[in-house]
Length: 269
Image 1 (cartoon, helix red, strand yellow):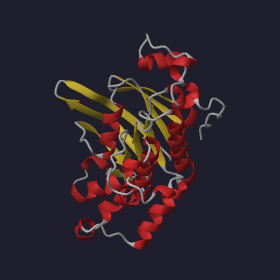
Image 2 (tube, rainbow, N blue to C red; image 1 turned 90 degrees about the vertical axis):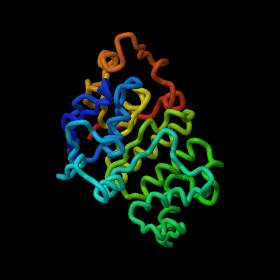
Image 3 (cartoon, one colour; image 1 turned 180 degrees about the horizontal axis):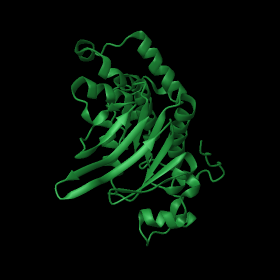
Image 4 (cartoon, rainbow, N blue to C red; image 1 turned 60 degrees about the vertical axis):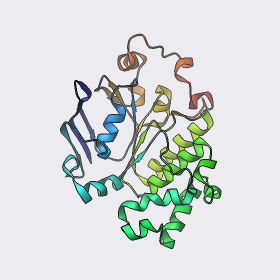
């Protein structure tokens, strides 16, 4: 389905991603972990084509994604939706209009200019908001919502694109534990119920273990671990984060795990 082969990105003298290679045979919930500067965000941006690679390739369902240009590239960016840490909403615009921005790549310049949307799209946007538990906020300005609510609006906008892959770049890094859990629960449900591949850059080991079928560890631009949550041992975590890292429960349970320590791990499938 998705093949990443020797994908590399060089910025001047620095190599941000160094010959990353992954094979995803079927839809999965994948977490990418590693220290800041490990190359996680750059890897996702290359998958979405927000950043061009220096060398290597990305192939999805037989298409060479790295070769796409113009309309074909924009079409891929609709199929491969991106969710950002800082939400990237239009703060003064109402929530439902922000969600409807997920259709921009398939709308004409005229309808975009005058903010015209088909009734069916408006109903679908509200249905998606309802699925994420925030339909009552549809008429509010995005800036009036909490951070966790805004991130769920961003997820709704991504779903409005009807993507095959959702990329989430540190989606819970700026959220409190309760909102972090809601966002991660939503992403997991999207994978389970829709059969979409979700690839998320995550801050904590326990979040990756709790929600993901597969965990990718990056260090200094290289993939140094690729396995199931059960294979992510303390020794391997030190290989990813550095020998001096502390992986006691108190060190890793900084977000969702402070709220809910009883949720079972997701079994690999």
